[in-house]
Length: 382
Image 1 (tube, rainbow, N blue to C red):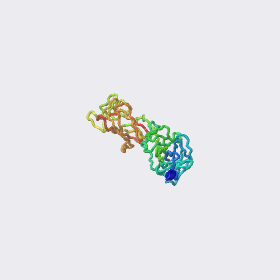
Image 2: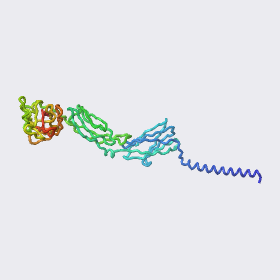
Image 3: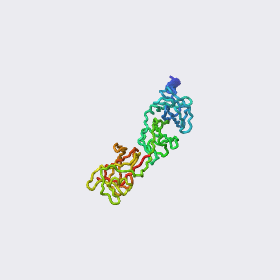
Image 4: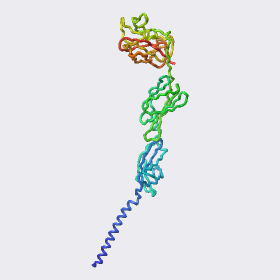
């Protein structure tokens, strides 16, 4: 075998081996390019925002980015939208809404496409559309108390806001009859105003966001509050027709030449703060309760009493009860009140106004067995 022949055989083997290797590589390469799965652009970065029968979507395009379209699919691909984009800058973005949605949560699939139609990696996220079903579960704030202070200040006290509550809305008329809409924080518990129309109505509701990112606000139904008519208290200054018709205990020994009625119950209605009613101490010292009944001489609408202790003496009653009656037989309890018997200042005790000719002053407890009172003032409610 000649040297030339051996060279030809070697050359042929190299060619064959090279041809075989090239064929295998091409087959491997074609396996992965035939599906068109090359990634030519960055995947979308997505944030969703829940709304009322809609979802807002914001897509970010980190640069550099070759995307020309973004495709969004939901309902397992049965619904979709293609959005033309032209990213510019390091972090461009685009926003859009998917509306007319049924109230539920959705899986959203998103991917970018370049101008050749090549897809990016698919991104899946969730979004929620809320509606009447969610709104029907919302509860309005509770009204805890309504009152009028200083004659014309309306004070309303509310429970704290519940989960997802963000604002509280009130609509009412001012003194000129104009509609006022006031919105406060859901956790503000006390609302007051001087500009309101007595006897009118207020409507109120609570605002909710189902999520901090929600684009729509949801509401409870309006509730109605009938506003009060303020009670104007007027001190009764003419006591000429007043009289004490009954008492459980009094002490005549407190009397003196200048004020012979001192110690008697009538001393508590004589207009003199230096005289006083004092329960018995000379021959007996009866314990609580103590009382006296005042006859006003006529029937009036009463809304408060004011009491003054015996000057400089803090050893008497500190709990009292006020009852009123039109006939001295049928009594209406207007409340039990704590009394500060360490001050000479008058202590005004207001209550729901009622018609009365008779007022029963009950001393229920104190720091000693004795009840004492310098003066009882009565206020008519107008």
